[in-house]
Image (tube, rainbow over all chains, first blue to last red; front, side, top):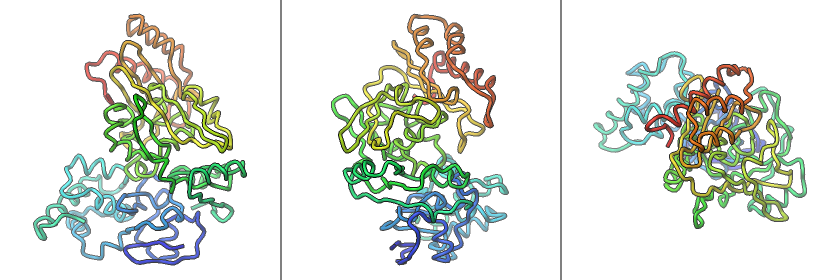
Length: 153
Length: 277
């Protein structure tokens, strides 16, 4: 079974009903994507499939054959969103953070606060109270446009 | 994950006709689309079936289009597709309102209208909308197609008239005359299953549908008649109370559901700009 993760092609012998989340963590050793609730409520396992945020805990891996999967590892270590989450203390325990950042990545350039709230409604955080997360997403948008003049991602 | 996938199989048809042949040959085959309910059931130990038919790649079932005055929504249209479709926004804003309240964006990108109909939950967000809009379920099998009004599609709790050979391929909706209304009441604004969900059309022929107050989604024909004949809202609330049969469960109580259903009816039929329209 061939799938593309962060631009890298994988040829894996896995059960077609294995969850994308488990394939990423166990077969690709990409453990940045976390399992929270395992039922599509918390968004901790959010990855992008063809640029759309989805819960990797609910997808049979067979359904992403031929698609482009993007995980938190695909951002490298110095993405403006990652820096902003650290600067604004948008991460505390860290379990929700990779999913939160992937959902934020899909919001497009300079999202309004209202749009951020809707776009992150599927990502639950039990530590921060969300305010720091909203600030981080807005700060990352500002930083990106100031530093590079380009829009994310 | 608590359940194991090793005993599960996945059949992957390339076309609709291949899918229909597979269903004819294997009555145990369970169709899946975005799979948003599958692993939840697996984890809870309530998964039915072990052989699945993957409809996700069938692009022909994603189409949203108009034929004369009928809006046809392919069963595999996702909630995100419904929110984005101009045709749906213009003709059926209450469906867009419902789609926006299904889970978060992650679920909206995967969950499908046909899946919501097939899953047959009495708390499903889109079913009151389809009932209030007098939608028709289009079923296909290897032998042909048939059309069933959504109000006759459900026969009991999680039971439908769909046979094992049939696939829901589309929902058809005729013109809806009047102001549309949608409101879901849950424990929080996002990511909640409905305690009560109502869709309605306020016009000369009022239509009212409720979810989470009976084993299936229900229309309220006597309440509708009361309003159509110019009865007061207080009278309509009285009639509504005799037409619904809510229960106590993990999400709410029968008493709370009765009060909320009454309040939603009042909001829909008395406020200047009812939400979801």
